[in-house]
Amino acid sequence: MKGRVTVTLKNGILDPQGKAIEGALKSLGVAGIASVRQGKVFDIELDGAADKAKAEAALKDAADKLLANTVIENYRVEVLG
Image (cartoon, rainbow, N blue to C red):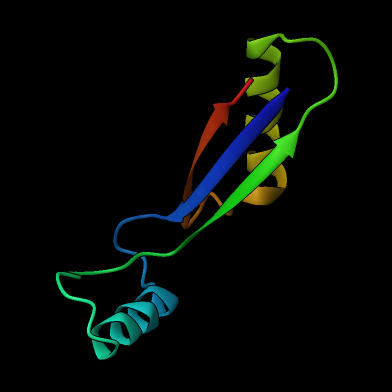
């Protein structure tokens, strides 16, 4: 079974890397960019049977303990199958 954890900065937290990407896109002539916020994506392969609830719990545990700094970041977990 596979899962995905997507980590993004909370609203109101400064994102200098996102601002740098935004500036670079504009300098490259990419039109229509209002703002950019960067994040991280973790694709994780899980052991065991296809129990979606256990997989989701394991992904949340991983995000809470290591993958996300929950003081300044939000995360979303997805069980991909």
